[in-house]
Length: 388
Image (cartoon, rainbow, N blue to C red):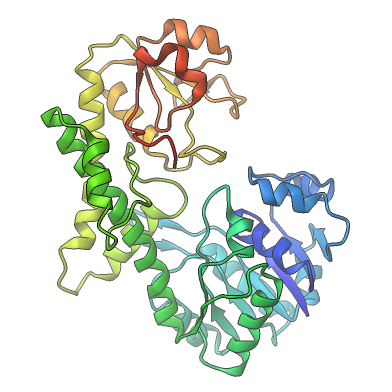
């Protein structure tokens, strides 16, 4: 089969390489530099499996800067463009998805789309009415940053928002290209598929917020967080996974998806969903107060990324801590090897690690790194288990 992919971030690139094992794929992105990198077998994002796949010579993939060529190539057009939560509109900004659909339909009126971008509940049905076509399908992704292709090769489940033979055909293609064949498949209505995506990510955010609040309690009362979490996790209904405290949830998905789900609850009685969003703010307030209590003059930020083996720091929780500290007049410096600029939001970027260590009174790190071992007494982190 032939697929065209639009948008080559984590989701789009992971789908591109997954499908190119057995299908024909043409992949497009609006950023020419990204296409140039991919044509030269270099990954624009940090992901081990993606980097390894790009070195393979047996994949059926072509990266292009021509939108029209990509539209005309595929039997299915996969949309994986970024959607972000608009605080002013209280709604996802889905303009990038609609732009692809409108431009593609102007080229091919018979185009069939598979939306992989995260969208509000009810969005696909709205698009079908707006463009007077049933050829718009939503199929959510459940990927981790830094493990996007791995999570496509070994998916937790495959969900296609269409209860039809076409929906089954789409699911089967992803199964055929996965390395794990024992995969749960669910065909649903499109609106239910959208809800599955948002509720899944919001539950993960809830779990992060829960263990963070447990840690806040333990730190405030001088208790051993690790012992409490280990004891709680021995209940098999709770488990010992996804329980490592942090400065708060962040990254591409959880902040925006929780806020979008809260917006979808506008006329529905609820307490928990809004509390999950609020809990993340409260956690960052608490972390900032703990650091301020140490009375530092200079606070060093060790890495802006959310977790190890990732180069993404969009909406990283540590940025929220930075803003709170700077609002109190604390000088903040940043050590982030992936940054080329001299300043990050008016905070100086220190390239030399020795200088960074020496000038920082306190160093904060969302996830502890062995590089910090020799100055552990300066480091403030809530990384209890040394893992993501």
